[in-house]
Image (cartoon, rainbow, N blue to C red):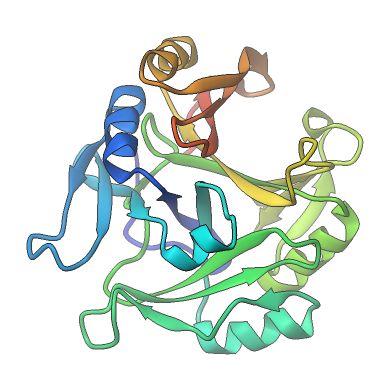
Length: 264
């Protein structure tokens, strides 16, 4: 079990699901990943926390009207830890990316805010978020069955996107045979933390995709189809483990990964 009480700067540290069917998503991911949930006891905050072995693992929330009106499909979002959300917003623009709005406290301004975030896009249009931790660090468990395990971006210009992320977060990018001729793996302080691949699927814009751990990819895929999901890429052996790609009932895509050796 890989528990965290902090995340190094520049590390993907949280993921959450923007969906058009929160209750359906909760049932689906409970069946596939074994999640339990915590809700705001006051009912004022429409954000559900997924819990693995008692630790925060991911979030689920109802997609706001502005996202629906813009035609954004249900999707998983990746958050990367930064020291200063407001300063980062300026750095994104200077590096050739775009900022979707000013930095905001989540869930609201004040001493109890969980963190401060920015929604941004790289030069090819892949959207990601940053997280300045305040009361919440992000995931309390990673690299374990049921937990966030990996993040990968698919882009139309690997070189431009890789240069952007390396400039912003201090990442280093290098080739890796498992990712194909155009793929890169990102490292921070010598540790692999994310990856980048070439062309996204036809009709799909550049985006980030998340992976969740599972003890048994084949069994998780069966649970996914039994609960309204679709297996887009059947389970197959790959490098450090076994992987499959799945869409939940609302269409949000993610990977399932069973690693031969779980990292710390």
